[in-house]
Amino acid sequence: MLRPWHWAAALGVLHLAISLLGLNPVPHQGGDNAAYLALARSLLETGTYRELWDPALRPHTQYPPGFPVLLAGAMLLGVKPFTGFKVMVAVVSVLAVALSYLWARRVSTPGVALAVGLLLAVGPGVVYQSTLELSDVPFWTFTMLAFWAFAHNARPAPGAPDDTAFPDAAAPAARPEALRWIALGAAGTLCAWMTRSAGLPLLMAVVAWLVLGRRWRALGLFAGIFVPVAGAWGVRQATVGGPNAYMAPFWFLDPYRPELGTIGPQDLLRRMAENGWKYLSNNLPSLVTGQGQTMIAAGVGAAIVLLAAAGWGRRLARPGVPELFFPLYLGLVLVWPAEWADDRFLLPALPVILLYAAETVRDLLAPVRHGRLVGACVAAMVALLALPGLKLLVSGAAECRLEYGAGNTQACQPPIFAGIFKVAEQVRGLLPESTVVISRKPTLFWAYSGYRSRIYPFDPDPNAFFKVVQETGATYVVFDQSGEGSRYLQKVATANRDRFCIVPGIGSETSVLVRIGSREAPIAADAPPGAYRMCTVASGVLLVK
Image 1 (cartoon, rainbow, N blue to C red):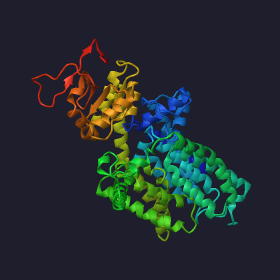
Image 2 (cartoon, rainbow, N blue to C red; image 1 turned 45 degrees about the vertical axis):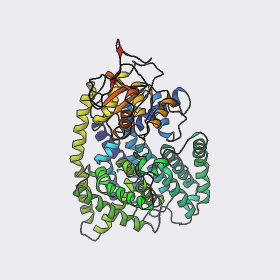
Image 3 (cartoon, rainbow, N blue to C red; image 1 turned 90 degrees about the vertical axis):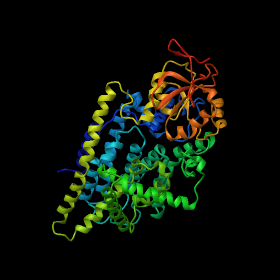
Image 4 (cartoon, one colour; image 1 turned 90 degrees about the horizontal axis):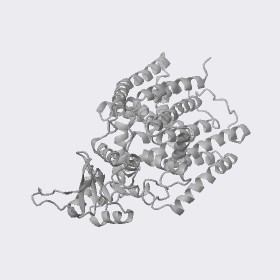
């Protein structure tokens, strides 16, 4: 007889197979991946938690150390960045799928759990996220570990297979065996919190669930596990950190255009509406079917959301941790800057959304003859919708693997960022070790070139730029054609042409390496308007005197 863990293992194997087929070896262009690499190396090489990419080697307080610790452990075992990190995240994603199924099996019926597990295992967007060297999949995994553990201490919903597990409704968590599950749930919550600061809704949901249920012994155990580690991290943030790197951009209308000012109440409502539409019409259907930004995708997203809302409402009569987490986490996602809205932020909430929606479908079909068969067909049809997205993902990853493996490390990157990476690769080993380069992607520039870097200020005022130059001792800057480069850096350079020169032979059509402060080789008299000086080079080594 097949047990729940057999099904969980089968879904995990299916998910891993698809993830490896869809694995794209090209590093993610966001930059967080390189920051995690730097922090992991800092832990291994110096025993400190510092920003190795930054010339000031500042103590880091933005990202909790959970994911860098995981990477550091993998590196000790011989895992190499970045492709090795991608494989490791794919394995962690297997655990997330398996735990999601086991949680759903614990709190709902076998058919609902299987539908949820299958959609997570084959969803093109979920598979894509499992191939990124970012912290979102581990965060999802630890969140599901907490859900699954705490589900052992709550009375299952009607229809669940263990509905009589706790016939006495009074505080089942007081039982010694139940406290072991509380400890595991506390560990999952702590790991989620230490992986991403977005674990705050999970923390609030767990504490509220324990208090509302008057589970005082369980609350004490939870606090004993959670508070020492999380409190130490909070103290470190308060004592050695600067302004909160998460909250500071939150107050801007656009974190990439701070000159537009900060948000007000009406702006916040508009942001929530914009985010809501993005997640409904693109991000949610993209995770499940791989299709987004079409009316069909919007219809799929709207149907899932409406069904999930109905399912959530029915469960509020006897809420568990997920029912309290659900509105808190979605509220956080909706108020975050719209420029950062992304599929990956929905991962921890996706199993909950799918379970609520599947239960609503199950109950709607209950009066229908052969309702279970119809429900299974509906789940199969949704899974089939994922096939075109999976095909596109796998074929695209195969093409990228061929190009990347042939030495084209800029393969499958947006041209703007590919140019920055090309500059970084070209200058590796050509500059003195102490050289500092200002760039749009400082963490990735450091990872590719070996030279420390800092981002240029999003400010067209030349004084702001040259203040960074003075603080860091930077002697080079990468000119790029990103929106921020055109909006800020180009304006600074245009107003100070005599303080920059372009290094010949380095860069691409979208990015070039520029020396700062050199006054040699003046601009030719017959140069066209807007021309920059060319730096001098000797024997292939860049002059830095």
